[in-house]
Length: 183
Image (cartoon, rainbow, N blue to C red):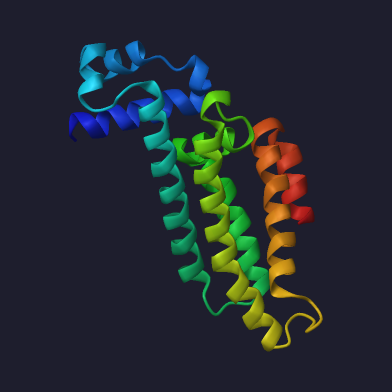
């Protein structure tokens, strides 16, 4: 693994665990086994590193979502949606990148809010782009009412996802499980 990759991986862990304010470049450098000044060979500073990790985390999430949707292609809509929500919770439990992305979706660093939210809105736009055709297809197949607009169905489903995100970040396992099963 290159020093750049190590820096990103260690920084991702620190940012996911401690947030922007709590993460320290000095700790990151120490964990990678380099001097703090060496980080500036790769990044202009903490903001640059943070924004690169934000972009990487969103790309990772989209790649995982696309993998999940390929695996459920052709299955009933209930299974597709259930699997997607379940996989989202599993990624949050397993990956620092998911924790990082969700934490910053709700509480981005104030001075980087615009750039972070731009990246996150791109992620959400991609989710809509992926789910609208799914809802359209099941609508055409008569699995849901033809009176339901696929864009509105997608927005409603993503609102359910948002409620699970809130429980992942701020709730406990019991509340998350309750919301998941109600969904």
